[in-house]
Image 1 (cartoon, rainbow, N blue to C red):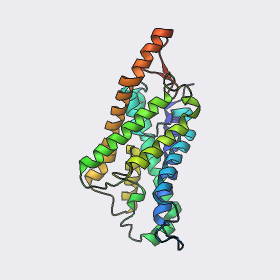
Image 2: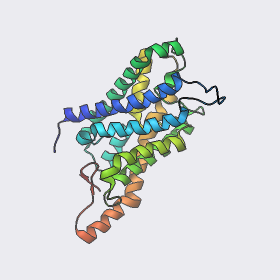
Image 3: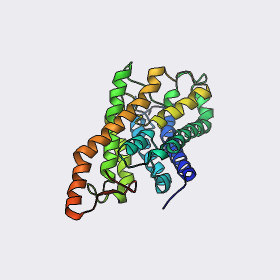
Length: 274
């Protein structure tokens, strides 16, 4: 089934917007409605970081459900670039996919702000310290700690997306792949979430951050804070994709070809695996 560039653009836009609606929405819930239980001193009643990791996982799942049938639900420029670099995705489609992802992320952030605006202004009247609802910030100042974190996190994401979608490695992946990818995002958040907020997606971070600037938020970060969640995920996705292909994907494909005469097909992207 062939779709037009406009349809793929719209699917990536809508899927990424849904991703941000649920993802930034859960962070807004935790930040803006933070409170403690009178019965248990110090306990946050709205779930805290646990809610954030689960919320972002479900956000990815819903984004995949929305756009998977038309665009393959990349929802992430780093994923699109890595798929193109490994021959799973045409380079010619990259511009409209990435444009849809960034615009969708921007719109998702705008809608979250509109929904929570009354509470937001009450909580942070000058918009001086809540841009972190939309985007990530480093736990340790400087470029390299966050960059390494983003490379590792996105390499895990990309490698596992390919492992889940590779029918030679995981024949059942097509049936439960969306849920598995959601679990991957949850696991990355739980294991590597604190160093730089586990953006692992340039559009997910920069789109809402651009909205925050335009909306008047004061603490949107310096150049390093902007660049780490953009450059790190692209590098990490390429690393993860090439490692997967070199260690797992290509050996499986060669053995399958020798046995059956057929090359492996990646059902997640409907393109021949290299």
